[in-house]
Length: 497
Image (cartoon, rainbow, N blue to C red; front, side, top):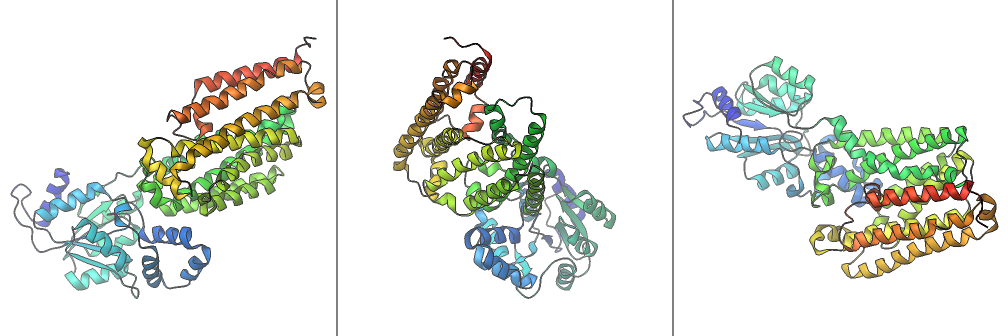
């Protein structure tokens, strides 16, 4: 409820704000995209078409006129209004206005089919005026239509965009919702602004949140070849590793943005993911598309500088294929996730000119397969997480598959430890470490860490990616510190026998 705003609106409309008297016949016209809803229906529809039908139908749609494009997208996408993020403060204001006797009209450049669906869902509007496949009702066209229907200064109008300035000039009074600062200033210059709502968070902060910088910890895997070869004094190699690290960070963030843009409907039905910037409407979809393109471009440039761009491109291609379709295929998805982890290690080896051995590939492959499986098993486990179960079911898994995934994952965890134990007995390990028998102590530590992750998943504590869980887990930090001490002792301490 916003009584202060309502009082001002009633006063502008010519009624005593405290009397509850009926307002005059001047309608209150409300924009849809970015005003009534915290998103853009055309962008929502285009992303829905792309995620379900691929790029070719999308390219065909883009050859149509703007009004035809909106009509065809509305037909193909058939968005559910229940999934759309609304501006609740504005809706409360409009309900009060209607209670006071005001006529409320939805006026939008969106297609009539989509606008009607929203209006029926809210049961708030007396009339809907929208694009019709021939006329794109935006900017000057919207202003002309409203003047034709209601006359100059015969209506009040609430909008959010620079294209609404021609409408505000013809309106009796103006409402401004989540407009850029320059647009809000221009609306005030037109005059008679009776409503201002600004509840959208900072775009920069929301972009950073959508980029998920906490996930960048995974990209530290590019330093593994340097650590494994104990090349701590190779400054140039560390510089090259930093370039490829930054490249993977930017590309991974770009992929996260794309994934969130394509998973809007599913995210909005998820108890936690519905708060993500795009799903909640805190960040515009257009901004997300542009930011994703910029991040991918800069990430590829850094990959070129690191002379390992082929692996960056492979990572991007596999990640996109995974996001678009392959994550729906059971087992293939976890093998692909394990592969994406391994690609980081290989890229680090190429960028730093410290090749990855087959032993390291085998160890990392089993390790990352176990981590991918623990994530899926955790999502399927626990009756309290039914929404997450539904999400995984859409990817091809069923609740009864969980026990089999646990078996696969635990076996992979033990296999990684066996590979490491076998490596310690090789001639290469004997030459690399002064005390390889000390290095053997790393084996039970790694096995303990894997078992701890699986125990956390069984007890319903694995709510995040297992890598992120480990970063936040103090026991994992202790295990990591102990492993570092053992590796240093094995490298420099004299042999025990």
